[in-house]
Length: 106
Ligand SMILES: [Zn+2]
Image (cartoon, rainbow, N blue to C red):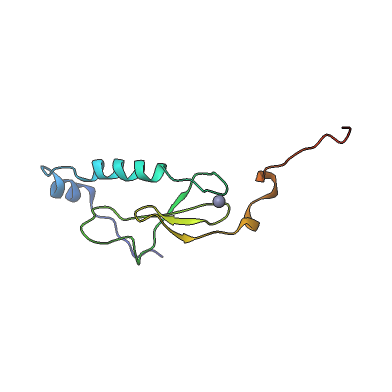
């Protein structure tokens, strides 16, 4: 059961009509920042994770996300470059690990 109740779209539109759109440029800049990060171990794209204890701060108009690797759980705060979790290499599926193949007939 959700406690979130969405506002009437008509009422919402009347409230924001005529005001400058500050969310769209902020969102574009935020997504560009997040796209620069990848997992240093797996090299895969990191997923956004919102921690309610830290996602809202100061005068930011958008919540701040942590970026988490879906394979090894490496997690970084892209706003401070602080590594929150180093992750666990044992969580990486074996098939995604690099293999070195040797020719046995040499
Ligand atoms: Zn990873």
